[in-house]
Every structure is written in structure tokens, then in C-alpha cells.
Picture 1 (cartoon, rainbow, N blue to C red):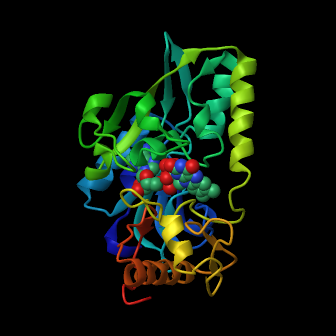
Picture 2 (tube, rainbow, N blue to C red):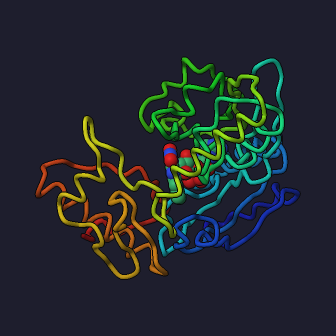
Length: 299
Ligand SMILES: Cc1cc2nc3c(=O)[nH]c(=O)nc-3n(C[C@H](O)[C@H](O)[C@H](O)COP(=O)(O)OP(=O)(O)OC[C@H]3O[C@@H](n4cnc5c(N)ncnc54)[C@H](O)[C@@H]3O)c2cc1C
């Protein structure tokens, strides 16, 4: 075990040593983390967070891993997985979802209980916690618009009202602090179940045109007043390959992993970034979150 960390005080928490990040991210690439903890309740999640902070351990919080590129060398630290924080409830116009609730289960709940307003999220392979952290969304709507409050732990338990979350494009206050989002309150409207189901279906139909294969969705944030995908395409990079990684022929802001390594993906991201800067003078910024060490000299 690296760093002399025994993790004994967390012995009663579900855990997995040598946690394979390639099996737990949508890119399907990357090495192992030392250990992953799977708290089964918010209390357990706080206990893990607190213990890792006290022991000065490196860690990160993992949702569905749909916006993460993990280094092939792995991660010399711990993972807190929100996988089992998955309860959902509804009361008086507000839906409360724990951070590990997936979009699919959230929308299933909305469909069953006739709750509308979140259909735009359909098809995003994410958790509620990951979406709140990134202020994810689609079709010009973002989860931040629907959030009433975010409950998180950052050494203290806090319930942050929407207006203090500083939601912006791919941004939230939570990105600036080391925190674990425990649950989120979302505004919903009562609506016929059938209407909710049909809106979800429409959104899924629109999304079916997106590139298939292993990816993180859009790799880069859109620059102010433009589209990263358009810039990449105009630089002639559609279809460009590096090992098993390829710029999608369908949508240039998607990089698809065809059995490649994280190094392949990282090299391709770096190359695309450099070419767009050289040709267009625009420095693209990654939306994807890097975990572990990557060699910055690539590209
Ligand atoms: C095919 C595909 C399509 C996509 N389409 C879209 C889209 O339409 N719109 C969109 O916005 N995104 C899209 N994405 C990207 C991705 O789904 C979002 O960024 C999403 O918000 C990530 O959620 P996650 O649960 O997978 O988080 P992860 O990828 O696991 O984590 C992302 C970041 O959030 C942090 N995090 C996760 N959970 C917590 C928590 N509980 N507390 C604190 N920090 C946390 C992680 O530490 C990490 O920094 C797509 C991805 C794929 C693969």
C-alpha cells in the first residue's frame, strides 16, 4: 500500500482495492486507483471524506465517470464513489435526489410520478452529483436552472441555495472547493406521465444522432461566441486518429476511444488543441476532467 495508509478506520465501509478506472469511466481507459470506497449512506460518505482529509490522502469523487479521463498509470490515491447514494423523493414541487442517482433513474421516477421539467437531461450518462458539479445540460437548458439547493460536505455540512452556487457555463461554485455533493433539490412541475414520457422520447431521438462509441461527450468547452466542434472541423481534423483514439467523423468535439489507451486520447486532445490554436488562434479549454498524471509534452 502506497503512502502508509491503512484505511482501517474505514474498514466497515464497502471498498475495493486496485479499483479499475477503465471499467468505471465511459472512455474505458486508464489504470487503477489504490482504493475505492462505496458509502451506502450520506453519513458514511461524510465519514470517508473526513477520514481521507484527516489522513491527507489524495482522492476524488466519482459519479458515472462520463467526463473523466484517467491516466494509464492510474491514480495514486482514493476514489469516493457515489454509486450507492441513490435515493429519490418528492415533496411539494421539489424532487430530492442523492448525488449517485443516474439521469436514467431520475427520469424513470419523473415518468412514474408525473413530474415534468427535467426531460432535457434524457440520455446524458451521468449522475445528479456530476451534473450539478459541472452544471451539465442539453438543448440550451442546464441542471443549474432547475436546482433549488445543493447539499454538500466540505468539512462542514452545507445546504447551498441555487443563488450561491454560481452556476455558469460548465461551472459551479462546487468546482472551486474540495467537496462531496450529497444530494440536490430540483424544481419540477406536476404533469401527465404520458407527456413526460413523450418528451423524454423526443429528446432521446434527437440524441440518437450523436456519435456512438466510448467517449466523454464533448471534450472541449465551447469558446465564447463559437463552437469547439466547428473550429476542430474547420481545421480538417474530423476523423484524425492517434492510436485507438479518433476525432469523430460525426461531431468533431467528440473523441472516440476504439480500444486505445488514455495516452492515445490525451495525445489526440493535445494535438487538436495545438492545431486549433495554430490555425484559428483560439485556445480551447477541456471540459473533460483529467485524473492522475499525464505527460504534458505530448502533442
Ligand atoms: C456519450 C456522452 C454524452 C454526454 N452528453 C452530455 C450532455 O449532453 N451534456 C452535458 O452537460 N454533459 C454531457 N456529457 C458529459 C458528462 O455526462 C457530464 O459532464 C456529467 O455532468 C458528468 O457526470 P458524472 O456523474 O459522470 O461525473 P464524473 O464524470 O464521474 O465526474 C465529473 C466531475 O464531477 C465530480 N463529481 C462527480 N460527482 C460528484 C459529487 N457527488 N460531488 C463532488 N464532485 C463530484 C468529479 O470529481 C469530476 O471532477 C456526456 C458524456 C458522454 C459520455
